[in-house]
Length: 297
Image 1 (tube, helix red, strand yellow):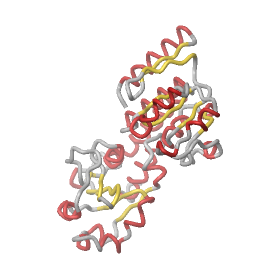
Image 2 (spheres, rainbow, N blue to C red):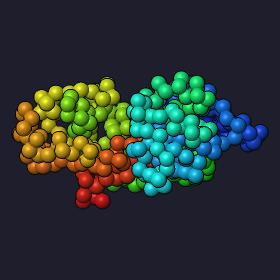
Image 3 (cartoon, rainbow, N blue to C red):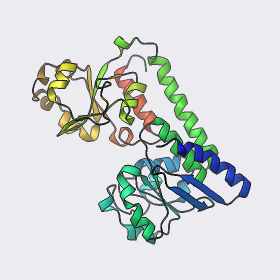
Image 4 (cartoon, one colour):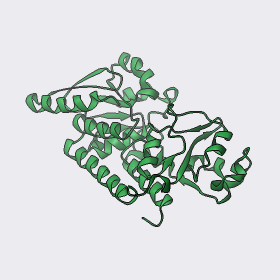
């Protein structure tokens, strides 16, 4: 998410305090969003944003979610407006909920902006690409739909927990930190670059990303590249777990000789936590750190 979100969140607070009505901010598309007071009815198009809404004190304002929004439990009971992908989202269902704000992800839902505008709906796009973007989203959503103090406490709590992990792993020499290959997908074989949300999770957990040198965020790689890099561990979301059985990994060209495969050093993390760039990302860091350093946690 652009740094303008943090800047405009601060400006928004000042405007709100001065006039008590008009709220204005810039979203991840660069579009200016103006509202008369805080949003009282919000529809979320992404599980991560739903979690951010609740974590920032805006849970009571959420009136619609996707079929994938299963956390917290209160969100799972709300009316559904479709799935995550744009072609599954029902604009008609959203209109029926009479929201004063729709929140979605720029990459996934930006293409719906024109349809929303034609339907008279206000849409704000977020880009939850890294930890800072998540902090900024918590702060902004707390300001426009929730409670700023609640959002600030949430951000501070996350940072404190990350610091607690770093206190245990930060003193380790670089060579002592395990080399981890994170498998995003197997057909084609994909991994996470260092600047991605997943790349940051690995780093914060005290791991070395086996592909820390790549420039792409989600590069397609070959089996041979994994063999050459010799990762100590293979990690992934548990939703991808079937493809990561030791037997299936050993069947890949050259992988039977990898120590991570031979010694079954394969770690699967809760997909709902590690695949969502929301406030629970700190749990993903903690889970990864505990799996990599059981003697420290």
